[in-house]
Length: 128
Image (cartoon, rainbow, N blue to C red; front, top):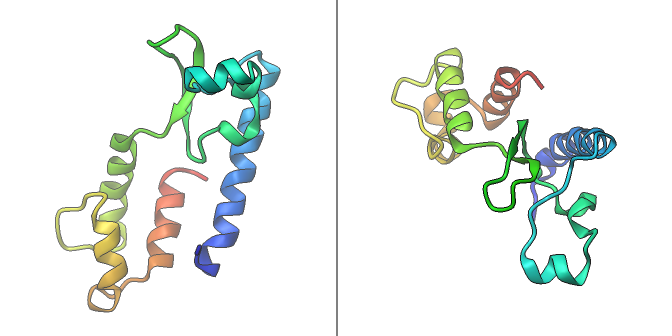
């Protein structure tokens, strides 16, 4: 089950993603890469909102599989960079990686930070 504290931030993210998808569709873009069987069953499924990434990339790029221009997911390296930029602000006294999110959640009392503080700093770093 999704924690209640994440409900509103996730709804906001989905609204931003849907707006981005609708803008991409208006530019004749916005198609997601789907498996062959699904694409064959419903040729327009790749343009449906349900198949879009929840955390899409900022930029469009050419998909090497079929040559179409589309928006992929946020790359792990981007999330890693944001984590490293947020760490000094929220005073994490160690090397930070994506797995640090679990550490922060499990040991937030020891580190003196909350998951909410980390989430807000990550959103600020991504300019949401």
